[in-house]
Amino acid sequence: MRTAIISITANGARLAEKISAKVGGQIFTKGKDFNKLADLVTEIFDKFDGLIFICAAGIVVRMIAPHIVSKLSDPAVLVIDERGQNVISLLSGHVGRANELTVEIANVLEANPVITTATDVAGKFSVDAVSSKLGLLPEPKEAIKAINTAILKGEDVFVTAGDVRLNLIPQNLIAGVGCRRGTSSLKIFEAIQRACAMIHQPIERVKLLASVDAKKDEIGLTSLAEVMGLDIRFFSVSELQKKIDEFKLDESKFVTRSVGVGNVCEAAALCCVDGARFALPKTAFKGVTVALLWEK
Image (cartoon, rainbow, N blue to C red; front, side, top):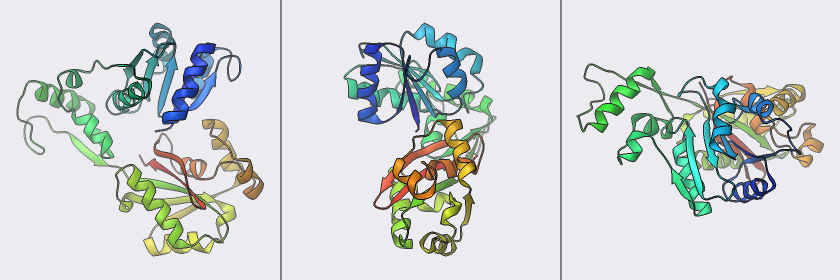
């Protein structure tokens, strides 16, 4: 997941640094990165997979209310008090994986995870949470509630039978790739394979590669695409910079000096599809950076 950690006080900013250092996340601090919280939320609500607010829950509810669309597409939203005593899963607990992130951060902070979704409270699995972990899109939305209700009641649930049918649609992965000049196909392959392993997915789920157009003549990258039987798309510096600005992606000065833009792998992947979510943010391997995006 690619997450934003939003703090509005000095105490919150210190807690944000601790969370970011342990589990990752891009920090937004009031007075430094934004002045009005409502404006920031409007700008980034659909640009991150998870939003972690360090403030009162009531404030967050008011800020996100105008932007909520669907449990299948909304980002995970968490709320943490300034002292780091409680971590609350507020929105998209299952598909958005807010519940999972809540437990992870609570463990780091030695805090109390607050999760209120019925299946989790009952200690049962939910079909939408399992689907999200497996890279499957559950549709239609109405069937999710019906099946989870049946699970809560202890009823038998069948994959292909019954009055209610839920489709679990496999999602492909897009691999955005950045690499040093002269990197071999094997090293790029190993980096993508390790990236997939980090999210417990086989490399066969990758159906598209993407990079900056300065890599069009990079033999290691182009020959890997040919061997794997994958399409590869290249994007201009201006196209990548547009995504960097839109999604507030982290930039590397070294990469900027090398290819003219500060983020290749995440930006290139985002150029391939609209409305997608990250399976794995930018991850550095030896001479290669990889970002994985779920294709919708």
